[in-house]
Length: 385
Ligand code: FNR
Image 1: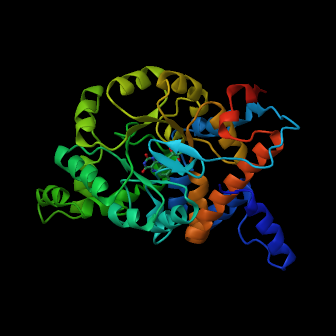
Image 2 (image 1 turned 60 degrees about the vertical axis):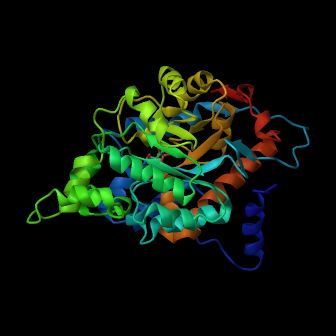
Image 3 (image 1 turned 90 degrees about the horizontal axis):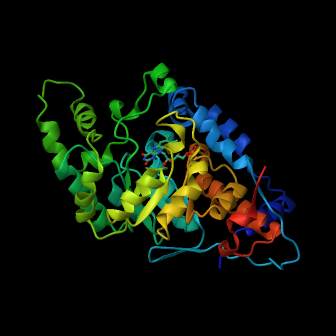
C-alpha cells in the first residue's frame, strides 16, 4: 500500500540536508511560475477557457462550498487510497486528464507525462491530440495502465483505426470525449489567433495513420498546410448523437467511457447504450460558459450511474478537492491544468511533483480528518458551507 504522505517527510528531510525544493507545492505559486515561463499564446491556450471564464472559475469555487467534517480518535494512522476501476487495481484514485497540447508545453510533453505516470502509478488518459503517436505514449507509461481519449473524427475509417491502434498498443480503455465536436468560444485564443493544431502541432496520431494520409491526399498538392486543413475537415463529428453509440460500442471490447457528461439523463442513455463508465466533466470550462460547475453535477451523475464507475474532473487544485469529489461518489478524480504547469516547469519531474503533492495532501487530509479509506468517504463527510 503506497504511503503518499511520505512525500511531505522527504521534503522536510531534504531541508535538513540543506536541499531546498525548487518546485512550489502551493497551486497559486505553481500557476504563477508556469504563467511566467510559458509563451503568451500557449499560456492563453492552457489557462484560458470559454467566454469570460465564469464556468472555469466556478469549477474551482464549487469545491470551496463544501467543508469536510473532521472526525477524531479513529486511529487513521494508515490510509488506503487504492481503488478498483474495471479490472484494474490502482494505487490511488488520481488520474491525469487528457490534455491535447502537452507537446507545445514541453518538447516531449506527452512522453514526459507518460513517464510521470509510470513513476507514480497514476494512470494517464492520453489525448488524441498528441505530439507523439499513441503507441509511443503507451510504451512510456510502463507498467501503469493508460486509457486512450478519442476525439471521434468525422470519418468512420479513421475512428476505427484509432480505436484499434489503441487496443493493439495495450490501452486499458477508450474514453470518447463527447463535449468537443466543435471548439468553444475562447477569447484568449481568439485574441492570439492561436489554435495549435492549425499550426501543425500535436497531430502525431493523425500523421501516423494511413487513412489520414488518404484524406490529406484528397487535397490538391498545390494547397499549403494540407495536413492542417485535412485535420480541420475531420476533427469533430458535428452529427454526433446517441444513434452513434451502438457503432462506437461495436468497435471494441475494452471498457468504453464517455467524457463530458453532466446530466443524469445523459448518464442513463449512456448506460442503456452499453457504456462502461462516465467522466463527469465540463472540460475545465473550456467548451461552454454556461456557468454550471461540474462538481455540482457529480452527485446526480453518480446516482444515475447506479454503480457504474464515474470519473470526475474540472477544478481540482488541491488534495482536499480529491477527497471531496470522492465523498460525492467519484470513483477516480482527474487533474488537468495543475500537471500541465508542472510539465511546463520541469518535464516529467514537474508532473510527478504535482501528482505526489496532490496525493500527499489528500492522504494527510484523510489522516487528520479521520478517514482511513475511500469507503469511509461518504456524502455525510461533507457539510455545505
Ligand atoms: C484539455 N482538456 C481536454 N480534454 C479532452 O478530452 N481531450 C483533450 O485533448 C483535452 N485538451 C485539453 C487541453 C488543455 C490545455 C486543457 C486545460 C484541457 C480537458 C481536460 O481533460 C479536463 O477536462 C480539464 O482540464 C479539467 O479542468 P481543470 O481542472 O484543468 O480546470
